[in-house]
Amino acid sequence: MIFDSLHNADSYFAEDWWQDTLAYIRSATPSLEDGAHPVRGEAIVARVHTGQTRPASEAVLESHRAYVDVHVVLDGRETIAVWPADQLRIRTPYNDKQDVMFYDPPADEGARLTLSPGFFAVFFPQDAHMTQLMDRRPVAIKKLVMKISVGLVLNIPRER
Image (cartoon, rainbow, N blue to C red):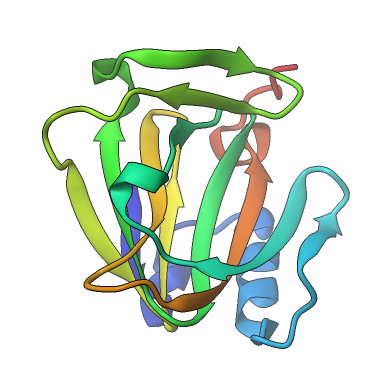
């Protein structure tokens, strides 16, 4: 997992996939239309979602194998909880068509971070994450999730 200010984002990776990802993020505004926006075919896809934060009891805990997620809040503020996936009990086995595996939330709170405009978080396959959590009360958010093929990031073939 990576959590940092967008001002520092250039220091993480030098590859062109990261530069393409950052260029899209830096040009993104809250007026972006919800839905999937291909950036580099299926290798890099931007997904935009408008929603509301919620209590942990209404959230899902998930991880992915085929894509690395880069989360950016365009408007609003959310809390994200993160756990090592290999320490969790699987609720729903991996679905390769949707690239998702769901887990039972553990008793401990996990690592928590607050994502607001100007910051980003990167979740790798080993990072189970519960997103769109509210801080004190539900708030509206507009969110961008960059889905980057794990083959680009880790230089390995994409699983399917």
